[in-house]
Length: 274
Image 1 (cartoon, rainbow, N blue to C red):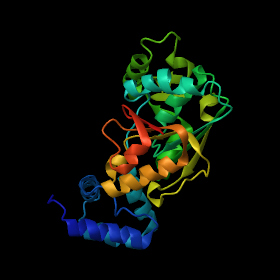
Image 2 (cartoon, rainbow, N blue to C red):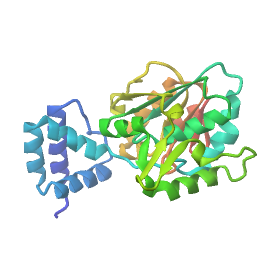
Image 3 (cartoon, rainbow, N blue to C red):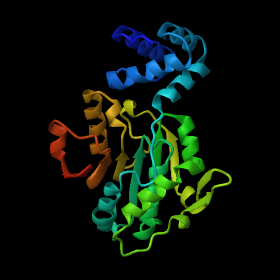
Image 4 (cartoon, one colour):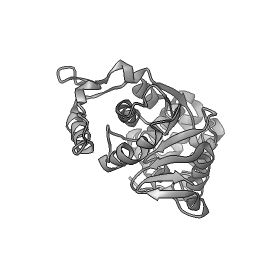
């Protein structure tokens, strides 16, 4: 299939905007083009065919948006990040009355439950208010269910063990997850499930969906899909939504550039608001 032209991508973005509240105009051109190219192949039609159908069928438009915005995640993805949180960031909140946490672009929720495990062992679980949002309603439903495929078990346990390999505390995977090979299922235990408030939210709206200030904001492997201008605007939203001394956690291939970077102290992929 031929490579899509910038004009075709612009027409697609304009058609989505004209028929919905979704705005992809500030997404990274390269990654967005790749996703539209895949849609064109999956639905066996060119961009004009996609535009015609999404303009006539709102359900199809929603399906396309969900296809575009699906991102993968794992339990304890990038263990080095979780070790810093476990040993350096969370202990600072041991005397806090309350800790507010926002997972932005939460996808299917594995990282929400990852953090809840750490909160439990730091005695912060009952004091935490945990909020999570995503543009994609399908992945939010998966996150709410806490149900994942058994085929992921090896990666999940590997990440889990790598995170806690030098810990003085004994962490056991099955304290938090029910595992059934026969049912092809890993299920988050209910005491973790009941802790999270979920909401559908588009980060490009540059609004705080829960209208509170946060001690921790997670937005991992989402900014990479935005162009630099939108990245900076979203970072400014996070900075204004954090308490002083609060932490912003982003993906290992993401960073903060420009004048907004001066408002943070960098610790790997964790940025502390000055």
